[in-house]
Image (cartoon, rainbow, N blue to C red; front, top):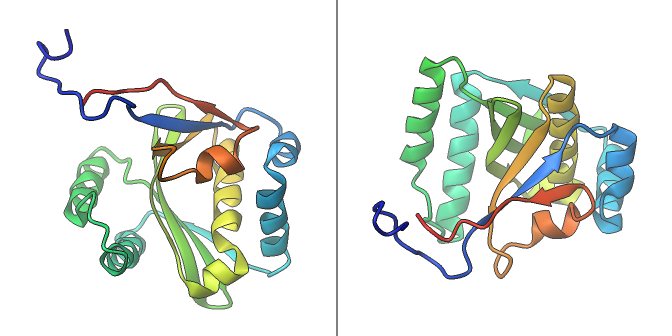
Length: 188
């Protein structure tokens, strides 16, 4: 049936997405994080990182530049940067341009995420963590702060995006007690 609809099977294993349930109390959410991830978050908490949320073009272009450089460096080219710019343009015209979550150490931006809200869900689309950010566990700090921010803003779910358990285990592993795995989609 899917083939008749113009869909094609891209992988027999399919594609899955991880959803973090933001309806839970933050204390409960934090307790349910994987021990290793929670320890990294506690480490980041002691580094006096500053959390900033922006929706402006400059912040978006900053995260796109960082991610683009990272993709070139790691020879990753799954999704062209132009797609993100086009998506943001379409979202901006509908007043939902997404949010750039940033971690600062002093005045230096050391990590960032671009998360787009839709309905009661927000989806993680881009993320970058520089050398200082990695050392300070800024990605854990940002993801946690984003979850709390989104929860306070009334969102119920954070979609961490598509995963392939063979090549990308982070969301499954670190959020194993706080997340739901969405349906497998073996067609594109």
